Length: 273
Image (cartoon, rainbow, N blue to C red; front, side, top):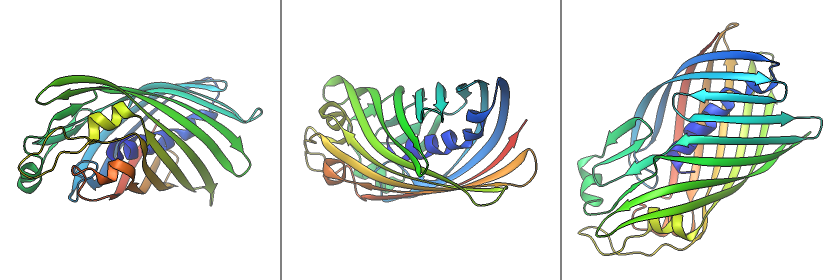
């Protein structure tokens, strides 16, 4: 997943981790996120995004169904007895053009410098995408893999539509420090196919600022996440999230990327009914 939406998705997936252990119960949570992150994946500028969140989930045995204002809908099956974690989710996508970058319902204007740099570059947009994730729940953490399908429209000198695929392998380690404090770490390596690379990282011809470039499939990035959850009261908690994404392969070499190292910091207040 791309850097910005990927950080939000990880935050929200961990945000509702407590729901995975619930038994035949509804849960409702409300929160507000403040995120410092790059203006688009590959940018060397940062901005602050403030996003509300509403999460509704229903747990029945090992299965949890959920709806989120930000990241859509999905279900998770978690069975520690057979060490299996399976999830299927549908997330809101993103759009990059020469003037703005958008994730879901949230859109930010580029600075004048970034707008000049991206002038005459194509508009690339994924309205929504799906993810299938598998995990092995071991005593030392969760080892897993994901496959994402990105239906992507490309609007430039020619209009194209790409059925892009991004796959990854990951390791997730939750560590309870106290009854109130949980620390979670995650390491992931992402890979992109030829269609995703062509849509998001290629430039068919030179622009005023950038040279033409043809992106090839292969490794896309490596990511490290660190998250801390602290329970202030029975229904109120705070979440601190940090991540570092290093763009590799042609995702790092493309002229659309001006900074390969992408940092993100987030703070969230949560109220759960």
